[in-house]
Length: 81
Image (cartoon, rainbow, N blue to C red; front, side, top):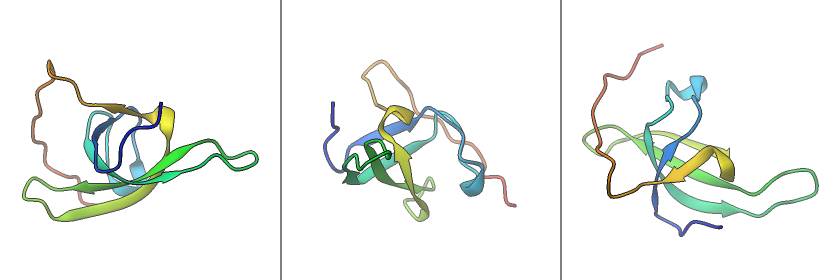
């Protein structure tokens, strides 16, 4: 199932390159069609708690999950590399 653009999703994997962890929230900004050996995916934008962009990255579709009503967001300090 393709998620709509601008949906909020939670990461199901860590992305060490951007200091992002499983459970962090991102916004889908583009859908990536499957192409040859490349699976379907998304370009996502992660922001800090005050809305500043901290990372833009591509991710496979199965590595994100839509948010649900029974989930609660929380804040963590971003590890600075």
